[in-house]
Image (cartoon, rainbow over all chains, first blue to last red; front, top):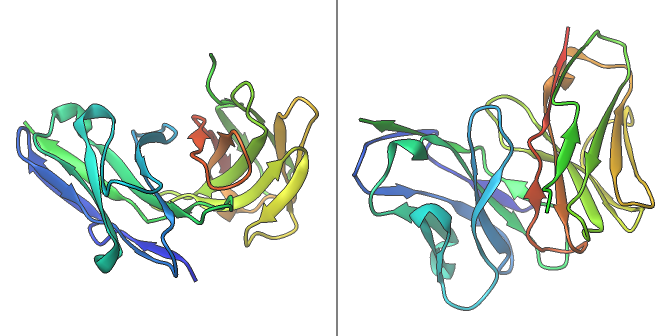
Amino acid sequence: AQSVTQPDIHITVSEGASLELRCNYSYGATPYLFWYVQSPGQGLQLLLKYFSGDTLVQGIKGFEAEFKRSQSSFNLRKPSVHWSDAAEYFCAVVRSGTYKYIFGTGTRLKVLA
Amino acid sequence: DAGVTQSPTHLIKTRGQHVTLRCSPISGHKSVSWYQQVLGQGPQFIFQYYEKEERGRGNFPDRFSARQFPNYSSELNVNALLLGDSALYLCASSASGGGTEAFFGQGTRLTVV
């Protein structure tokens, strides 16, 4: 069965520090991969997506993610975190041609001033 | 263009009651999916509709039902509410039925007391 693992439930970083959020997926082929961000009480906003091609994808708000097939990972990175980045981040996968997104349990990011 | 619109934003129901949640997709999008997000968890897939037909159902009881109208808006109905149905219900809109990026609404926060 397909699954998504986000090993870190909570991460705390200082403003200006770099950030990496981990995501591992279990799937028989290359799925479509997504990162979403959710502020408290809000819906999900798409940060970036990977369908195929270049394994390093750029997203909004200065985020990027790298797809590593050999590690079944799709980690999210940002070189310098801003206080406004504090939120919950979800990694999701969906199989090509299907409709069902499978989400990880999320990583809650706290940013220290 | 307006994004995905969900109504109401919040509601409180009593155990055993029935609730209807509504979703209007992005103009031109023909697919609507519903997700349940319990506090502290990632969203869980409930239904997908494409061109007014149900394309998939998640692991939810028959108390949950949905439909899509000719204008592609959608309703999610939940009967015989349980305390465990308290959650954020998210609607996602996508252009087609398979594996494209989904755009999420702000959600409906349902509290069952």
